[in-house]
Amino acid sequence: MRKKVTVVGSGNVGATAAHWMAAKELADVVLIDIIEGVPQGKGLDLLEAMPIEKRDSFVVGTNDYGDTANSDIVVITAGIPRKPGMSRDDLLNTNYKIMSDVVGKIVQYSPNCILIIVSNPLDAMAQAAYKLSGFSRNRVIGMAGVLDSARFRAFIAAELKVSVENVTAFVLGGHGDTMVPLPRYSTVAGIPITELIAKYLKTGSAYYAPSAATAEMVEAILKDKKKILPCAAYLQGEYGINGLFVGVPCKLGAGGIEQIVQIKLTAEEHHALQRSADSVKELVAVIGA
Ligand SMILES: NC(=O)c1ccc[n+]([C@@H]2O[C@H](COP(=O)([O-])OP(=O)(O)OC[C@H]3O[C@@H](n4cnc5c(N)ncnc54)[C@H](O)[C@@H]3O)[C@@H](O)[C@H]2O)c1
Image 1 (cartoon, rainbow, N blue to C red):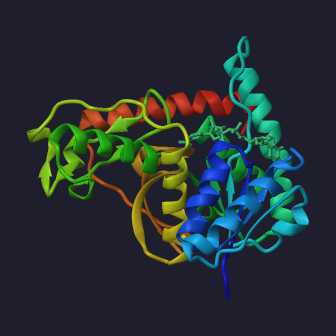
Image 2 (cartoon, helix red, strand yellow):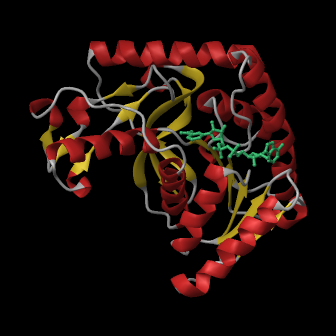
């Protein structure tokens, strides 16, 4: 049976995620948005690229949640960006309303799906989706760490002039200024980068990399790869954090998050993670999730 992935929000990240997934022939893809015409147009455009790419992924755009029924995975990218004059809390509350609307409909049509949340502020929106869906925690995953560590890896590879394939990197914590890169667990062909470089983390691409990161998580789940990736996960005591979405290493397979991997942290790393969790807690308090 072919797998089905719905992407909610057919803007930059959503449409590009659909592109990566269709190009990798991971699943049939449904793009849905509240704007009429845009998901249909982008979906048809992508479908028409498939003969050139020699892929049999079926792609369709819609405004009707009926078309999303029985999706295996639903990626949520719906949201609005911060507008001039808009406070952090206004943005939180607006995106929370969008999340409530979207999650309610998704749960109705795809009660057994796995949710991958991409909308920002990431950890708070993942927490909102977890509470709104009533799903078990293994089925609600936030996308941030794969992107943050990919950005980290790209800079390390460019700076050291080595293949990106030689570079592994790890980032923990919330998605934002307080994230915790772990140089001790980041290696170039097995050599910890603490021995090679000092500090590289910067910002990168706004949607090619985020959507590629999302597609990597989708692939790990659909192919039951048991791949360990940094994801925002609902912690229940792991890393000394309880009742909060925070970025940690997770094993992704057919069941979603199949294991939260606990690695040893130094006191300094632990403190940085706690500080990051505290900032997520502040956001979550605003929306009461
Ligand atoms: N987690 C990450 O690492 C990461 C990285 C990049 C972007 N993001 C976030 O992803 C989100 C999408 O970014 P983008 O650049 O694609 O934005 P975008 O504005 O291009 O697309 C967002 C889409 O959501 C749609 N939308 C709004 N309300 C909706 C609703 N109720 N139902 C269905 N669709 C709805 C809009 O019509 C729009 O097409 C943003 O919140 C952004 O901050 C997260």
